[in-house]
Amino acid sequence: MIQEKTKTNNHNFSRKLIDQGLDTDPVTVETLQVNITKLCNQACTHCHVDASPWRSEQMSIEGVERCLEILSENDCIKNLDLTGGAPELNPHFDYFVREARSLGKHVMVRHNLTVTLDGNPRTGEEKTYIPRFFAENCVEVISSLPYYSSYFTDKQRGKGVFEKSIESLRMLNSEGYGGGELKLNLIYNPVGTFLPPDQRSLEADFKAKLKKNYGIRFDNLYTLTNMPINRFEKELKKQNAYDEYIEKLVNAFNPEAADGIMCRNLISVSHDGKIYDCDFNQMLEMQARNGNGGLTIFNFDLSQVIKRKIRFGVHCFGCTAGAGSSCGGQTVS
Image (cartoon, rainbow, N blue to C red; front, side):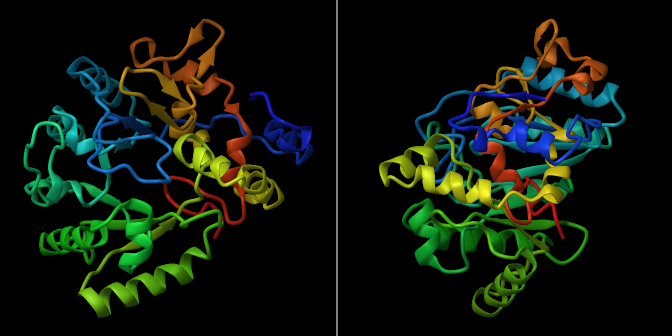
């Protein structure tokens, strides 16, 4: 394991793992998570990607084709997880999804809901076809919704976002999502410097409120810890709350959660084809490495990827605080 520089030994994540006697070497690669664009129709306060309507980074068709080759050549990679920005804004998104499905891969899309109604902020292209496209390709939809009321949602994501999110959820429901084979899962990020509450009880609250007030149904709610990097880090420091938040994460370290960290079974790919241990490391430009240098999709070798040493930093305490946090929600039941 590799530990990036930290403020104090107490903040040394690698040291914490050693002290706890935990094995956190990579196990396999089950999920290829690909960040195909930093362009987004929103600019959320907690966004670790720093995505916005003013970003232009996109994965090229050459990058998409190489990812498809990797999926085709490696049976252990069962899942393609597309994220951004708003991944639907990459011009090759539809092709990527269809081809991955034709390979028999499970496709998940990190969908912000509002892109369906807002469309592409740079080109004006409409995206109202997205819910049907998802259904036709049996895509698992994973959508962020900060809360089941407008105040907290709009506070984190912008005025009017909640109303558009509800309309988009209804469109997904009308295509069969949230009650059968087509899976619709929601992501909850706390508003502010709090750790997520119990996932199971919060899911029950969300289901009851969204069903009663808006007729919305969904399958699962995943809670995620806000990572103290990029836009959220800047906001914390602006409020002089960064050190306090880091201490909160460190003090909430859970060895059981550490055992289930997602970087042991997942790799993250950037728009330019570089490989990272996770999406958070990607945003910090902590590229995965071996003895020959940085790993990319263009020099991809599964055996070398599994042999890599995971790069850790103080932000990793966000994945091991409390019941744990991952792109699939809590890691401790």
